Image (cartoon, rainbow, N blue to C red):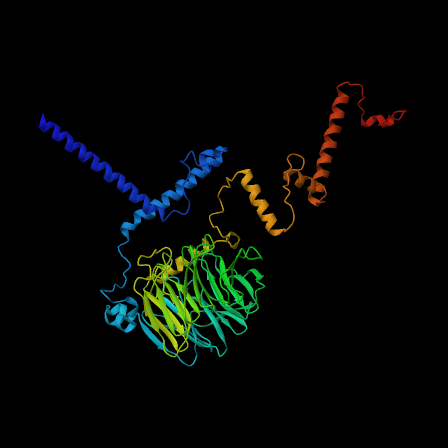
Length: 551
């Protein structure tokens, strides 16, 4: 009996252990899917006022549940696919009293493999600087542009030159377009587009005296900010001008895009950062960030954080979701350039120095991750290479490729950007990108807004309208407007307006209908007369009668 009791206890303990393991696995899987969730599922919570079960319309409730199920399945599959991601990001780890920022690029090159060592190099181009740099989306090709007119493209890994131009006029910025076949150059007066051979394809006369360029890859939009503060969007697939807004903030030299929602962020001389969309001629948001002019901006690829630097010597990290500062740093020289890597490293260029900060958005760091000094030069441009541990630096004396371990995403999505794509794959990718192109009308602060259901109550909606009205009309009292039902509905108003419109097709259709109606009425009278209903039926011979009949 004692042996049987022991067996039962062991079986019960084993069962509890299995249940605990299953529960822990469920919790771990749920935590994995949390980072992939953009929309929180609310369909199964009865107490939640925004639950799908509280929707009265049966059709809308079913659509919302299917949408939530689709989002959860995508997040689950993304979490499950992490098993296939065999590569991990590697960082420099210091031992004992060592500090990572003490390691120079020379020491790093001496202690890495041959392939990684070849990624770090310097190009001495003292005659045509300072230089601006830009990488393609897959990180394979590099574009450089000197202020005095020198343009070059090349495969920076194999060092194969693509094309080289000497424009003999001022070049303010350079930008790759959808792939390595075309690039844009902001020159002295206009912006020009060139192909991979260096041949001029198009002159964009709406882009006048452009300071900075940005390209939105999912919308095929080239955006530029000019000296007089004019912000312009142009579609590079059709050539049509999408929008042109006056910022009314004067000259602007700081611009970046939010990769999450394609909103353009501008930094102005009065310390304000404004967020712009081509669908509105006024800024969506205005943030007072610095007490002096804003020098540089950068937004992480998730669209959560923004880094700004100003002439007041401050470097600030902002949470874009709440528009509040998170951390603040001090730089001895005002930072002129900022860049954020795919894994969240922040590169800061101030004077001849380049500092790379690790985990700068999670918590305030006491010291940088890596530093680099460019003696006798000034940093003009910073760009992290996608899918590689490299930071491109453009300065007065040329360009420098820094090795920054742990900055690039080690696992790439071949359908998004393939660093090893063939010519056939590149052509197919270009066609698929054009087919999947997003229209500029869909650019908004919240890209998930389209297709969502507004389930806020009437009181909440009226309170939001009151706050918006009082903010835009000081001293005036908000009077809610009652929605008209029935006679003054939108449908009836539309029908009433149509009665005053003279349409030739409509007039002809009414005339034809009247003729058909008269013919039917005449035929009916003739038939009724033959049936003996009091009317005499006349024939052709009645004309010879003595008395003329009454027709």
